Image (cartoon, rainbow, N blue to C red):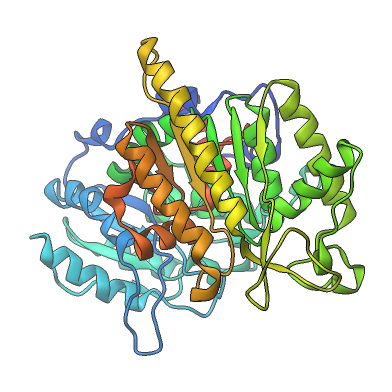
Length: 473
């Protein structure tokens, strides 16, 4: 086999390890080869392409957003031009039953629209033994029979439980997993392809297809789209001094904490559930009190809006850290309640569905202050200030609770027109931008949300960590 079991186990240990000593994203990216580095590989070379195939189809089979599949085009064009046999693989959501067959049909149409080969794209339905991790000989034979210039899809990687085994694994679990992990890594390189190109921009978890394959493959590189997104736009986003953070998921506190730990941020504008935790934390730090309504009621512990006490303690530590080096936290001062009224407080059992008019006015004032900082910075020859926006301010999908989000999208445009560099994460923030404006209103809108949040912190994105480890031998 192309890689030893010992090497695979050590590799996985490094993947699981979080270390302050691991190089920053910028250094990792400098070490990872771009696709152009593989230009000399001959026709017939088998190349695994880890794609961003996680797209959504409605009940009628129509795709809502094909941007992730369009992002694959230039990498696939590069392979077609060289006569490579390209084996595209990825997942669709977390449902193991979802097939990539609709993806194959959509991709075929996109290839045709871009003047590329548009024949049927086969989908290899079964390609791994989930119990042992071994790559099936039938899949290997099907790929070996493909002619130069062919494109084939491996079925949804998450149909196999092994794909996600490193998500929650601990180093102590690795010896018991060693045989399966070794069979998978070595089998992919020996039976499928020993060249690996990562074009899965949004695939930021420790999926084996993104993080384990590079240990065994002979060559590894970043695809065209992902290389540009990471080395151009993401590099700049990591310089953000104004961060707008919001949303329902309180887990985003973890992302904000890692961003703050990099000590680049000057101002945080927060809303949503995340702001509830920060608001109570700030009040308690300052000797006051803030009631969160239903969000602070233990009887709501099974609800998504509930904020447990440990999250408030985490928020206290974050605010204390931020204040120690000059971060200003801009938190809501009023709220839109469920009946549509504005209130400076949240009553027992109540919840906030949007920010109120006083908060909107506060946001406008703070944005204007930051524009003034940007202008002073430019006058001193330091270049444009950078802004990162993530999330929405309330239940924006309902018109009566969309006002705060809509007004802040206007602020993003205002900052862009004033010369600031404004970056928007994917997910709901991107959806709001496209609902109330368009991409021209900002410097760049990413197609991935979770990946960007992870990349702005102190720890590397798992697939970048894997590609860096491969590049360093």
